[in-house]
Every structure is written in C-alpha cells, then in structure tokens.
Length: 174
Image (cartoon, rainbow, N blue to C red; front, side):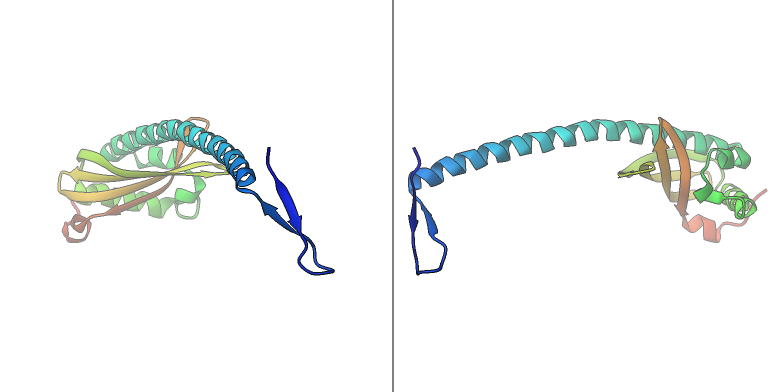
C-alpha cells in the first residue's frame, strides 16, 4: 500500500505532498503501463499506415508507367485527360502539351527507369504521393519527379518535374 504524507510549510501555504519510495514505485509502474499501451497503439497505427502507404505508392507507380507509355506514344492529350486541374488547367493546357512534346522531342522514348524515392502526405483531399525516378531516354538521362493525388484507388497527376542536361543541349528532333 502506498503512503502519502502531507507536510505543512508555512501558514497560508498549501501542503506539500511527499510520496514514499513505495508510492513512487507504484505510480511509475502505472505510468509505464500507460506508456507501454500508448507505444503499442502508436506502433500499430504506424504499421497499418505503412501497409496502406505501399498501396498508394503502387497506385501512383502504375500511373507513372501509363504516363511514360503515353509520352512515348506522343499521346499528350491522354496525359492531360488523366491529370488534375493543378497540373495543367484550362489556362495552361496548350503550354503543358508543348512542354511534354519538347521533352519527348529532345529526349526520345523512355528506355529504362527506376524509382529512387517516394513520399506520402496524408491530407483532407486524399493522399499526395511523390515519386522520384532516375530515367534513361534514347538521347539522355533525366531525373523525374511525379506528384499524384491518390483518392479511391485512382491516381491523378498534379505535378511533373524533369531535370536533364539533354533538355538544354539537345537539338529538337522531329
């Protein structure tokens, strides 16, 4: 049984609570149990989230494969149809199609690509998945970054960034 004693410091001041070593040991055990339960709940939440993160990354990865197939086939309107307003809304449609065309004309078809990193951000309007790739095209190397909003097992392209020296130095080929 724990012992709690009160000692009065001065008149008008509240008593000071002094716990015996036995009482502090009981409180420490109770706190430890609570912390252990909290740790188990947090670990479980992270594990469940990590499992679903893989699903979001897989969904977005499938959309990257589709993007590359469409880029190789010069089907820019299909890319635009699968993209969200944030990617190339009505005001930037023609400019975005011209950009995609320039990427394909300067780099050629995709030959190989491999994912180098990913990130999932959970938001109120779905999950935002960012995928980074190292890619080899017919006429140069590039790093690509795709940003998708994943909602209801559908990936909507909202950002595409490409960095390649070949985009600067290669002549346009038609």
